[in-house]
Length: 308
Image (cartoon, rainbow, N blue to C red):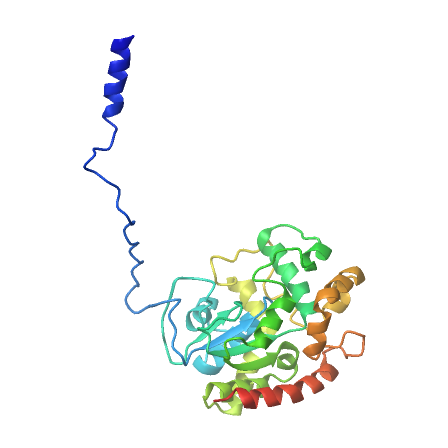
């Protein structure tokens, strides 16, 4: 028995760390991933760069295509989706990007951060945004979501709930130079809103060019391209017969958001909707035109004060 114990002790001793060997006080630094030649890390920006930010399904991808058309001349009827993602990178996808110009435009759903010095904030009626966002999540996740639970504050959504996102950006804690573009007005008056974008970016474009871009980057053309070639990003896979570009209208909540869901949403988002010019008592017209009047006056003052 003693001999067996001695033998086991000898074997175990072979796996002991010699007294002369000690663990390092700190672990070695992780070597950062090499950036391919001609690319820039997706976290590196210049102060002149412009960030297209909005809550999911607030027109971000549509506006991404508009920017590619306005500043690079891309026509979605002929240019592939991958080209648009390359020219106007999505900060939620990929590790690197090519800098084709300064300023560069980036797409993001992020909450305010100090690095975003110039921001185009896309604002959409939260009721419509939540209708569209639920459809999108169901198409991507492959499951059906209970709509009432989906809009409830207790449910965790990425990046957060609509009112939280809008309130954070309207507060603008890092004092970014910011232009707010409403989805509904972009639908009605795309050329005038693109003119505001060019003024904000300090870039000149002929009105005829903006008119051509607005026509080319229509919802119908974007949907047709998606049907033919897909969405253009390997990280986005939708259910069969489901599309990213679904309806593209204002007021979709009126026939897609049940009364009990609307009531729940207004409990925590009603004040934000009203503050942003969206009527909640049935007084707005179908495309929010009346609700825009008060907000446009407020926005004109904010646009002027945000310019350096």
